[in-house]
Length: 178
Image 1: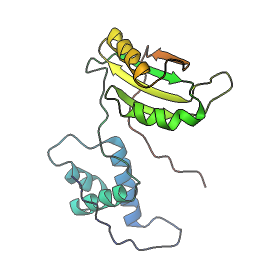
Image 2 (image 1 turned 180 degrees about the vertical axis):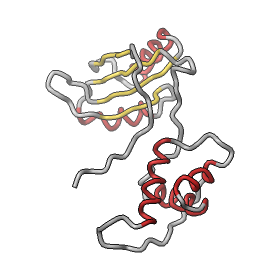
Image 3 (image 1 turned 90 degrees about the vertical axis):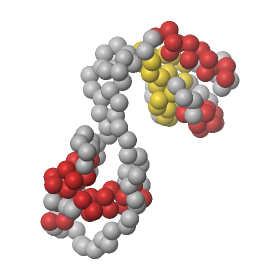
């Protein structure tokens, strides 16, 4: 567990990056690539960034505490684990039910992702959830069980099974252009 310790931060006017700023940018980039799979990953990050191990831990804790890092986890390569029956279920919910249904579906153990999206012309669906499984029949049964459990019998939906995986990775931060 990483402690959320707030480092002392000197406020500077915008300008060229100082040495400490460059080290923090490197730390952010290293974190986006994922922790190295070694016994002491923070030591490796410290070596890669020119920070001390304590500084690495402190900054990660600070970023977590302030919400810059929402969660510290891992990306599971589910297809390599045999989870090849992956379905995105898209729902056309009344807008006043999206939050309620989204929260409930997100609490279902078989739902791995659940999020709201804006409807588009020709695409009426506003709630999306993913279910990963080993067998297609099992995933379909899980979806069929979710529908009555959440009162979704009369809600238009589509089940979209993945056909080909081209890429999977964690999120990346891209700074905005000036």
